[in-house]
Every structure is written in structure tokens, then in C-alpha cells.
Amino acid sequence: MRMLMQEDLNFLLTNRLPRRWATTMVGKVAAIEHPLVAKPALAAWRFFCDVDLSDAETTRFASLRAGFVRRLRDGARAFAPGVGVVASPCDAIVGAHGRVEDGLLYQVKGFPYRLEELVPDTGVATRFANGWFVTLRLTAGMYHRFHAPADLTVEGVTYQSGDCWNVNPIALKRVERLFCRNERAVIEARGAEGREMLLVPVAAILVASIRLTFLDTERTLRERGPGRRACDVTVAKGTELGWFEHGSTIVLFLPAAARLCEALRDGQPIRAGEAIARW
Image (cartoon, rainbow, N blue to C red; front, top):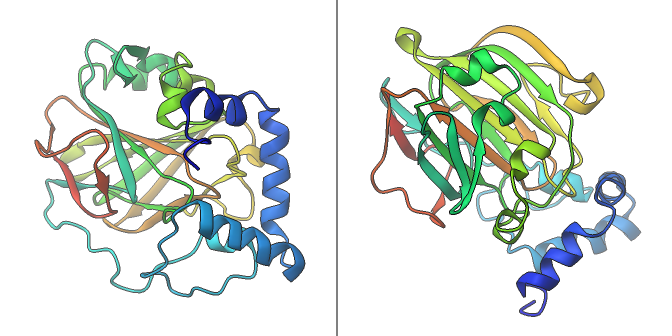
């Protein structure tokens, strides 16, 4: 494992193979419930991915996919109370975060990208051009479902097809504008007193799908096709919004009037429900 984490070798193994083909194959294998496939796949996942199932609803899974999208026991995640408190939507490792400066932000130090490259609608991007952002990376062993960070009304979802580069720190230091290249969804939401928020789930290599609970979990966003879909769905803080079928990243955007919690640090593990900002 130390050899595999050597940066150049890790980058070669995860990003120089045919990414879309590998993602499709893993998606198919992950869905197989036959024990001759599912048992070794689950064993490899638990061995290599530092999987913690201590708060899972069950530890017995029919397939690798079932392990990826596992539910937690009731009460396993408590969401920070308060109308003005914004909680983390998912279990994650905190990445780059801070102020969006005239539409410019960072995937890691020294690797900037523009908000309008990530968010296809320039009108939406402009509203957060001097706001705040937090990058939340979900590893392969983490709980893969994500939730409403506050009491919200979801007003629109835009799906953007794209590549599936790895989103780990090794790739983020080598691939410019990586998040803007990858498949992603832009979830537009509004909270109390008209406070706006964007959640941008970004897919990555081996991520077979992004599914949104408030739209249609029978079909992936990829199957529904690109474009914007208007919504009018009210969800309470902590309500499930969707899931990845492998680890990936969510970039959360808040307006300029918000403030991120001062305790946030790059590389910090965080759980769904912990406070990350205030409106």
C-alpha cells in the first residue's frame, strides 16, 4: 500500500488507464450479487479502503454496490441545530475552502479554477462570485449518502457530462481545472429568508453513478441526460438528497454574507451534520 500511494505511481494507475471503461466495469461488477463475485469484491473493499461499518444499519451486503450505498442506523448522524447553521452534507475530508475571489477559487494551493467553468449557468455562478466554498472529499470507504445541510427548497438541478478523473489530492495537484472537467451536478437551493446555496456533487473514476433522491433514483443523472431541470422540493435539514456509488467530492457554495467556521482545516475528517458555516 505504501508503494501504491507513491504519488507518481498512484497517478499512473488511477488516471492513465481508460477511465470511463474502468468506471463502467466497476459499476457492473459492483452490482453483481452472486457470492463468487460479491464476497471477494467486498473483502477487497474492506481490506484496502479503511471501511468503518460500526454505525451501519447492517454489515451484511449482497453486493459491493450495496456496501457503497449502505444506510446508517437511526440517529448515527446528528445535524447541528439552528436556522443559521449550515451543516456538512456528508462524511468527508475537508479540502480547499475559503473565499471565492471575483469568481476564482482553488482545488488545491496553486491550482485555481473559475466558478463559471464549474457551474454551466453564468447567472447562477455570478451570484456566488464573491461568496464562500468548501470542498468535501468522500473516500471509497466512507458513508456515500449526502444530505440537506439546512432547511432548503431545491429549485433546480443541472447535469453536466464529463470525464472521470480521480479526485484525490495526488490528481488535484497535477490536473488543472479537474472538477470542471469531470461529470457533475449543480444543485440550486434556497433556505430561510431567501438564503442561497449551491451543492455540486462531482463524480470521479469508478463512480458508477450519482443518484438524487428528490428526482428519480431508478435512473442515474447520466441516464437522464444533460441540461437543467427545474424543481420545487422542500427538504428539512438532514434529509437525504442522494448518493454516490463510490467515493467522490461535493463542493458547497454559500453567498458572501455567510461565514465558514474558523475551525475548518485542510485534511480534517468531518461527519455529516457537523457545523461548517453560518448564514
